[in-house]
Length: 227
Image (cartoon, rainbow, N blue to C red; front, side):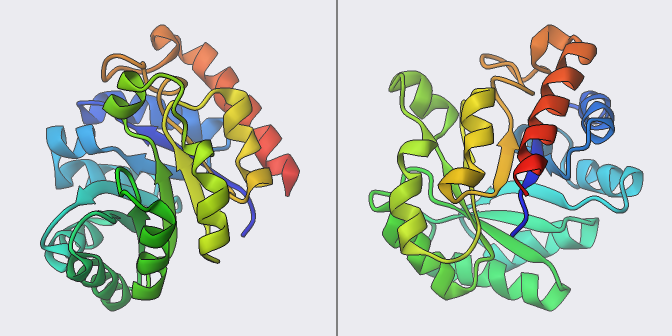
């Protein structure tokens, strides 16, 4: 897979998300993520609004689904999502349900290995169930409590375990983010602390959109340059 850049819109309102999405698209970002906080704050309306505004961009609904895999995925696909995210620590039938919904609607599924005790095994299980992309994720609370923990630490083992595309998520610096494709994770996700503040659900760079545009443009240029 050719490297892609995804921005996490982990904000509380559609208005905030749209402001950053506009900057991200102008900077050349490929995929737009309706983050979990935005889904909690605005629900399906956020997915519909993003799809209406950006009809050609893949839209990721970061549901972090733990149950009712088919039904929750179906809701998001009907609203315009290209991908939904299901958790690997959920029951295997939840993962399977999300995959079945994806196939029925011609869409795709990301499987998140966050907090699974055996992440390579979790990734293999999800690949066998038909998940399209594995999310190698170190969560917000986890990385703040265990300072220095990074999704890049888990990448090598998971890369050996599966053949489907990977993305690394969680507290990455610019240098760490652009290193992803070289480590076997061609889908680069920009969230906290770059596009999102690392302590609250607000735009990163102190809300300075020009600075944020510069960060995103640099990452897009460097990631796409890897080809």
